Length: 400
Image 1: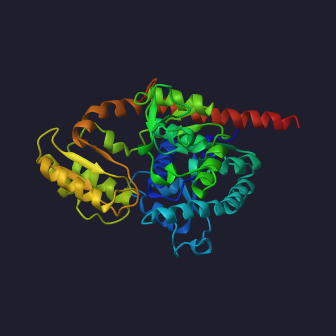
Image 2 (image 1 turned 135 degrees about the vertical axis):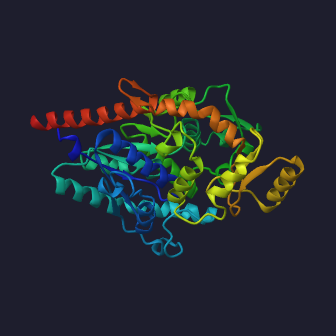
Image 3 (image 1 turned 30 degrees about the vertical axis):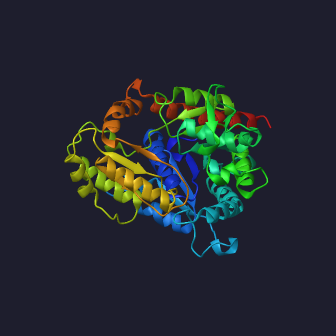
C-alpha cells in the first residue's frame, strides 16, 4: 500500500457555490487528518472561483496540497447562455437545462482520472463525488477505484430529497393532501404544499425526474455516503438515511473554517470578515464589520434572520407580505434577499441558536488523542475503509 503522502483523492463537486464551498472545506479536513493530496475537478470558471477561496497566508498554502483540474464545458453547446458554469443567477427553467447539460462532464472526467492513474501508476485512493454527479460511481468502477458520494446537506434533508425523487409518493396520495415518504417512520407525514411546484408536477417522465432519479440511483451504487452533519444533531435522520441507502453514512460535519469553532471569539468580526470574503468570492453589499457591529448593538435573542437560500426566494407579492409582517412585528431583523426563483425559508434567532449549538459542534470536531469527536471518528473510519479496500484489491490482484 502506498504511503500516506503518495495517496491521492479526486473530488468532483457539483457546479454551484453551495456545493463547491463544502467540497473545498472537506479537502482541507482530509488533508489535515491524513496528509493525502487532493485533486478537485471542475469547469474553468469554477476553478477560478475555487482558487480565489484559497488561504495563501497559512503555514501550508492550500495550493501545495490541493490541485485544481479543469474539465471542458461549453454552455452554449447545451442551449445555455455563454460562460454559464454554475447555477448562480439562473432561472428555475435554466437550472433544469443546466442539470442535464452537466452530464456532458462524464467523458472528460473519465479521461482525467484515467490520466491520473497512468501518471502515478495506480488509480487514486477514491473519487468523492457530489450526489448530483452519481455517474461518477460507474467511472470509479471502470477505473478500479472506489466512489464515495458526498451530500453537502444534512441527513434528514438528504433522505427526504432522495426518497421523494425516487418514489414520487405524492402522485398516489388520492384525495389526501398528505402522504407518507418511504424511509421515514409511518408517523411522519408530508403535505403537498411543502413541495415546490416543479416537484409537485413531476411524474417520472419530466426532465427533472429523469435527472434526479438517475443520479441518486447511481449514487446508491457507491461504497458509502458522506453527510455534512453531526451525529449528535441528527441521530434519527442518520439512522433512517443509513437504513434507506443500505450503505455506510459518515457524518463528517460541520464543514466550517476552524476559526469559527474556536473558544476565543474576541476577534469574531475579523474572523467572520475573512471567512465571508473567501467563501463568497465577491464584494458584499454590506460589510461584515458593519453587520457584526449592528448585531452586537441588539439585545440577546432579539434578532430575526430571514434567508431563502442561495438559489431560492419567493414571489414579489409574498415579499411584500413578508416585509409588512416584519415591519409590524417591530423586531430587528436581517433579511437576505435575492431575485425570486423558488421557495425556501430559514428564519430564527441566529445569535442565540449559534450559542446553543456551538459547544456541540466543537465537541464533534475535537481531535485530542484518544478523545476524538464524532465527526473526527467518522473521517478516520472513512479513511480506514478506503485503505482497507485498496489493500484487499492489491491482495486480489496478486493472485490473478
